[in-house]
Image 1 (tube, rainbow, N blue to C red):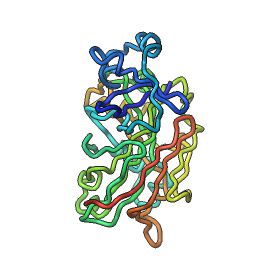
Image 2: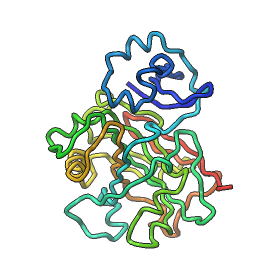
Image 3: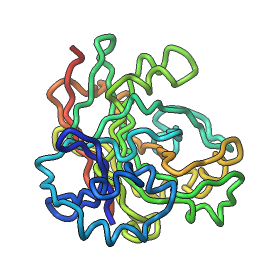
Length: 282
């Protein structure tokens, strides 16, 4: 199943994507489950078949895509989590995941704009797999971790590199408005299959700039969930952005920065293609 958040007919909603249309479940369940996050929090998936029979069918051409979870309680990103990327950054191997946070206000949806800020031209792509939490938990064991996942999506953890490098802390460079692209939808674990062989690919104006398999992560998804849940309660709708492969623009010679007019795509097998255009901040 593919679940998406979107804006249509003057309101935010959510539903299931099938072919060239979305079935607007939010229109039917607005009083009880008005958002995708509320569905995840209650796990009332049993109501979906009946709601979808009544849900209006809306062509995808008529919606504005929102981030899969527009207002997650937490967005926790894992840095330097592919060996090729670790080597290109010159960072030492570590025993624990490198983590930083994104704000919900920094996100944008599929086919929406990524904004190059006025204060920098060092706008870099980072194609990643996002994990959406579906079941709350603290001190989750690796062996139980996958049961806490509601689904998976594409993410572009776009980074303003000079602001990232101002100090040893990543926060400013990772939180400019309109930089965290999240979409187009969430696929449920049954569609994703066993995590590992799926290819992750980032393309800039049609040229492949990053490529890896998901099983090349240094810290796999169960290890990430176990570690993160040691220090914070994971809640339904929380998002873990699992790291980017090598090939980022900052580590090329010369650097390859995104610029207004560019089109960037993140594709993950069994998930979909996240597509955004870059614009200049006004």
